[in-house]
Length: 118
Image (tube, rainbow, N blue to C red; front, side):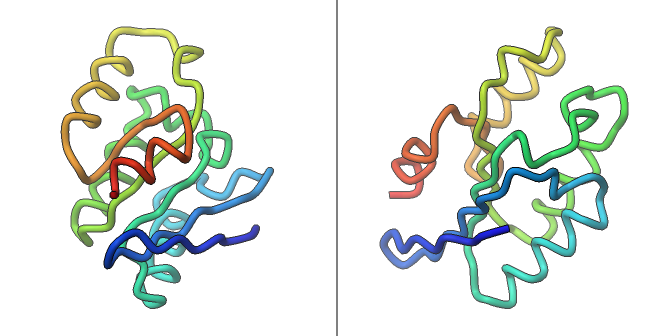
């Protein structure tokens, strides 16, 4: 895993670069968030490929549990990927509603996350 740091205005953003699944459960998400929080990171950019596929099956409850932690700690999260491959109205509605807010966004490219932060 590599972390590329971006500074946009007064915000410090950690872009996670990896080919591996880094978040398989709530504990993985908390550990990543804690590590970056103590480095004074304001936001995390991570690839959809770095999160267990069950996250995108809302019936598992994993997405809700993980995103609740990000909400509790007020850490912005940008998940980058192609979300059209996940079927179902529920996940599409979930992504749509998340993208209306500022805390968790599902975007197609890192550049879009940087624009949203700028």
